[in-house]
Image (cartoon, rainbow, N blue to C red; front, top):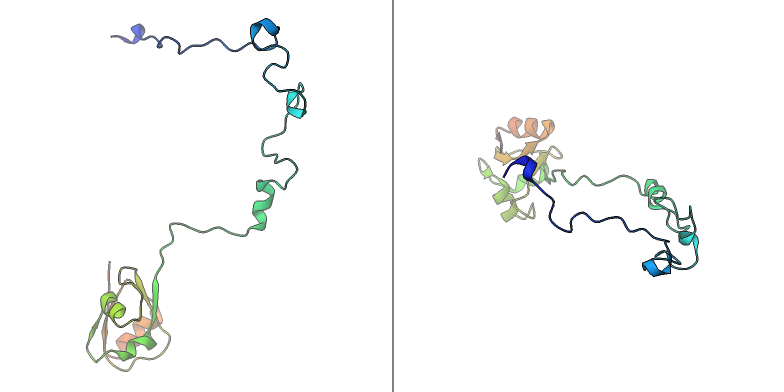
Length: 148
């Protein structure tokens, strides 16, 4: 089969429905428009987005402020203050934080923030660290490891 031999299947090309050509044609009198009303008149009908007089969605939306970014990464927040319950030189990772009840789920990424003070050296593994948290952990003699 070649390009010039291609044909549309039988019944694929239909002639357009010619309305208003008498009652014998099957689509005479009201021509498929019903009886009365705005949509039955010539040139009648409503503009796109018209909702029958109700405030249209396009006008109502600006009142609903903002939107939710579905691609936003959500972190479990852990402050340096809550790391004080661990023993010195202990390795603290998301799994240990979930076991201790500091975070709800070990699978969500963890970010460590710098609220509070730390006196014991800890090896902290998390997905992100604020600058102040990093400084406080290292000042206490601990180490910071970022998880990819």
